[in-house]
Length: 235
Length: 305
Image (cartoon, rainbow over all chains, first blue to last red; front, side, top):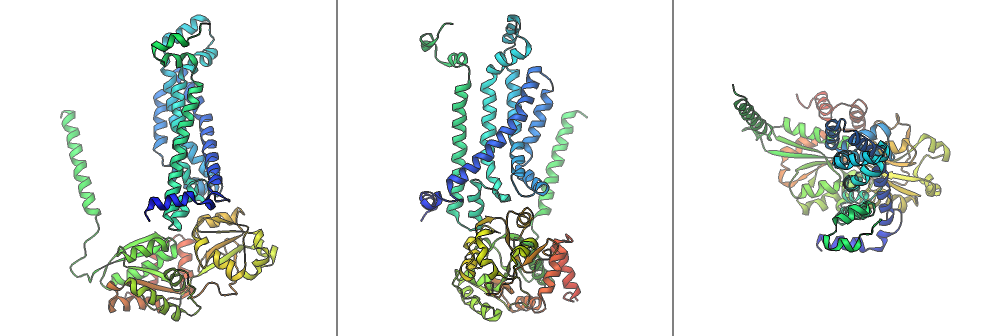
């Protein structure tokens, strides 16, 4: 039987969907690890990126440190963190958060810098105080790029969370590592496919979220002129 | 000098350096006096590296060019590699290899000679051969922490049968499919564990899991040097689940000349389990390199005289 036929057979086998090693359980573990890491990363990265972008300070430093961060292999961080923290979730969360931070810092910094200076000046002229200007004018305009950064981080984290299985963690990576040890190539391939599918689903879901978060005005700006007049509601 | 010419110089120098380094780094071709090339592989645990180094250095001393592929992986990786000729020799363990090549038929026993003979009947059609088994034995062993031992009053594996459903077993991910591991414990001892945690085969993950209490029973190897130091106690295999896992070199028939056989048997005839434990402790506790430890053993026992 070809490898693809074996993989399809593995995925459609009902016993692989039940129990503590079943696909739903591993999926939930994987999503949990990824979501925690991206959330933690966002908590650290977004304030830094937005703050630096708003004040226009230390941009090059931030972006360069970010790029260096991207170059550090997550596998390396994982093993070192394992030596320090031992078994558990701490090492993998650490490695994944380190992976999640760089794209978000870079994107949010650039997003804030890209806001049209005329708009910022107009806001000041209208009487917006700096903090209000940040939240009501600059951030809404920056949302598309910031969301792109979060999307990039999330997809990378979901794909890399498979590493958790290397230090006895859970998640879909378990199928890849166990399949390798047991020489069960169908399981290995299926695990890899599932991780890829989850990464794609993350991309689509966050794109949908971005559509919801982008301010109506900007969304309307992107629709063709012929349809614009019909949908525009005056204040 | 104008800066552009300077950077061209630098680029040219770099290119030359890289080419030279690549040429120097390539595998050495056998010298004119070499009797042939043998590729020795080892499993992914330190003891296997030591054994592979012992065999390899003895063969090198005997005039062969030896390539090493240490820490290659589990038997599931090494067996296809030797059958396809990518490696020539690996240090096997009689009973476990027999049960691997006969697909778990249960032919192994406590007699190393009989076990090796049966192993050879399965190896012969694959173009492989196993030589004489050594007196040195390293078999699967199941350990518990001292705390677990005193809590349930454990001395042997049979003691685990009534309390198995309260304990978590930790071993390499291949354990649920290996006859000497979880299926063997269920069939021979009637132990059904509460859960199985996939870790590594007697590696740092297993030790970390013992330490943080996420497993109570773990797979270790009987020749491990650091068990006492970690507060782990091996439970006695009273029903003889683990059979004669004597060290035995397994090699391709194509490289099994009488000269090679003599060299390898000379190692196995003198190797003891105590030697294994000593060498393991030097590698695992004193953090010495496997090749240095092997060389010291061979020199001490006058193989290089």
